[in-house]
Amino acid sequence: MRGLAACPASAIPDLQAAVGQALDRRLRRGTVRPIAVALSGGGDSLALTLIAAAWARAAGRPLLVLTVDHRLQPASAEWTAACATTAERLGAGFRALVWEGEKPTSGLPAAARAVRHALIADAAREARASVVLMGHTADDVAEARRMRAAGSTTPDPREWGPSPAWPEGRGVFLLRPLLGLARSDLRAWLTSRGETWIDDPANDDLRFARARARRSGGPAPVRPEPVDAADLARACQDDGVGGLGVARALLRAAPTDAARRFVSAACVCAGGTARPPAGARVERLLARLAGHAAFTSGLAGARVAADASQVRFTREPGEAARGGLLPLRLAAGETGVWDGRFEVSTDAPVEVRAGRRGAPVAVGVDGEVREVRLAALVHGRLLAACGAVEREPA
Image (cartoon, rainbow, N blue to C red; front, side, top):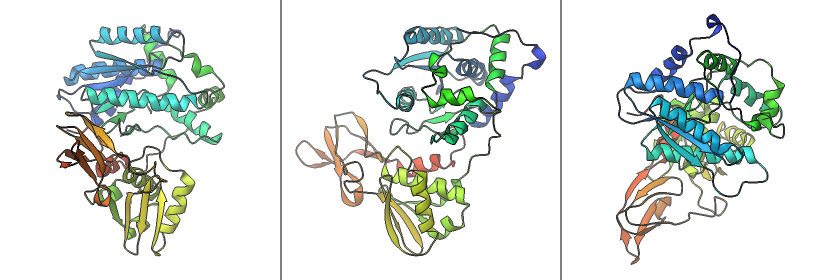
């Protein structure tokens, strides 16, 4: 655990007021659903958890603390116990989430991040929390940009957006209310309150790109406002069977950055996939869409079919898209996600398969078609990805 030397009170910013503005803007008061916060025990997430606990008490809402033990450091169990103690002190609920199994020998930070998001999303949904608070700061934005300058594809963290885990993160949003604050200010604030925090040795391990970016230092760059593609997402038509359609003229008239964000999101959502397509491939698709010629193309598991007036995004059914439309077996009372595009709930054992136009059909053990409860996820996911959902759902 680490603290800092005392800092004059006049030099410590009013963090609770600054963070409270973001919480007020994005969250609802008075609902019985919990707010979830991801706590690693580090200084950033500890400061956020303390501020969130005070806000939640004033708002009349429960707080749920989620801690992921990646099992990557010898002291990780002790860190998890320290986070549990913090949650107990604050009167918050607590869940310890563990990354079980073998760890990859390469690409470890990316794998850990993916697992962390999936575990947190699953736990949030189980607790009926639709928002998870995360402690990224202005320093994280600066580090992401240094990483990109060195060849990484790491995006800037956004203040508000959907969970990147799919389908675990369906209906779950991430709120990062510390993005306008410096890491040093958070630590000064913690020290003024007599708090200590955990320092993960991985943050200084120069084998990893983020540690190298952190070591390189330099001022945090000004954060541009995120590109809003909400108007395109709202204008996009949902065909009810997992397909999306938008007027080609709207795409041509939209600002380039908005069109880029929309097209990337529409492909991922219609394809039911989780990983955004490579930027160069999106640029090539945008260049074709800027014209008037009809064409069909594939990207991120989606089929993009454009004519003179309309662009349609549907699921690519071929083998190139994750081996085709694979069946999903569900037991009685179980809920699952088929093909990343439909949530399916059933009262009897079924196998969910591809039906007409790529929509699902459920078949019982006797081979007969069965009725199940279906929720199409594609259009709602697109709205969230493009910034059309601006605050916690009611």
